[in-house]
Image 1: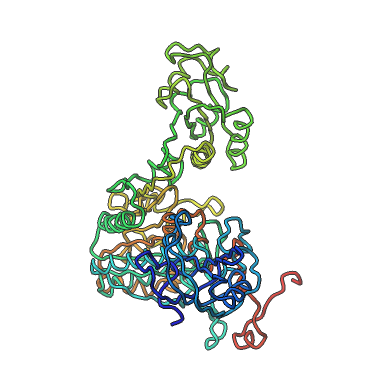
Image 2 (image 1 turned 135 degrees about the vertical axis):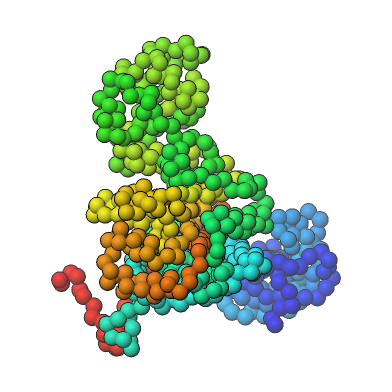
Length: 597
């Protein structure tokens, strides 16, 4: 070995010991006869001293060092002089006085300082091998390793079996596009990279393993956001002979354990459970951030008797009038209200209407002239009192109202709620709030095609209470579906699966699959159902998103070793890229030039 200990592992207990260390030059300071080098490796940094009076040669060599050079140092551990200590680092009370040095490799001038906080992300990804040297990225990737190891140990202790499933599988596109891989030995045919090992893990349940898990790589050819990548890692687990609560409890125990181990936060446990319907009604979204209140309230009943035509038209078309209440503040100026209105309009909503009060000490005594609102002339005192009572609001609160088609109102106010909380600093960043959202509809209507589609995926079972609507009204079917949400982020989804062939075929028929399509795409799984498939269920949970929350990062790119950009490009390796003509011929591929038609 080029070193006998890590740079960050040297403490005061090793004073006067001769040691050998190696790493990268992090920084250097020339104080004349004394030259100080901060030497960095994966364990941390340590200060190395080159004393000209002891070795002019070593001092001269060290004077040539530049950042990111790789060097080896042999020297003596000494206590720093009083007043020169650095309590902010583990090695801040000692330094290494160099006796011998060796340059292992020089470095070009790097395009940025490794631990700088203001680096353009494109540059970071282009030089990812440098970015990964930073203490931030070292910490994030090591945290990821520790969390994954803890997950494996936890599930192993609960008798789950780790099973690796294939990466090259059959293409069965359902939602996101598949990444496809051409086959050389089967010309014109393709494998697909798995969006999820869904059918395979269900097949494992029919194979009698009962408890399976995997840290699975999944691939989806879809538009990217901060929390999306073309490839992601998920914890995949499946259990046989279970009900919904059994699956939720397993997930809950694991994530509570991880939170206590890595966050030391005051986690609400057991995790709250709310239904999809309740989540949409209260928060306008199925992935609510519960670190702040600002809950939506339905005002249909209160505002059904006004002379405001907009409200009346909305109610006549079975829409909704809903609102949000919050403390008024100097930050909520006319320009900000206009910004909120435009925000909702740009989302396709009808804007927001503010209501606030002036010169009111007791709401029970307010007069309509005390009301500030564009629609004040359409309201009376009783309307205002009932609105404020509904929100349990005080005279200092401001209320924002939106009206329109129910799903659009929910979507707009849900996003507005998040914007207000972020802009006004209402989020308690110290909190990590998990909750389960359950009882999703099994189907939703695709507005473009007018056809039923699966809200999650086609393998989720209907509840016993609503299974009868499969034949008469699919929109009323509730699925044994559930999501794990944390701080407004969906960490994963799960369900109790269908294990009966007839019910599975019925679901396929509702979303429009023909018999031949069903047999082609799902025939193997359906056949397995006929050989004693047990009741089973499980979840797929995003590892990248979990680590991002634990590490306090906004983007999952900062917890992945070599991520892609938002255009799905790898700036370090130059992927995707063209392939050689010989490779195309071997694979029987012909590239179509769209510009030439």
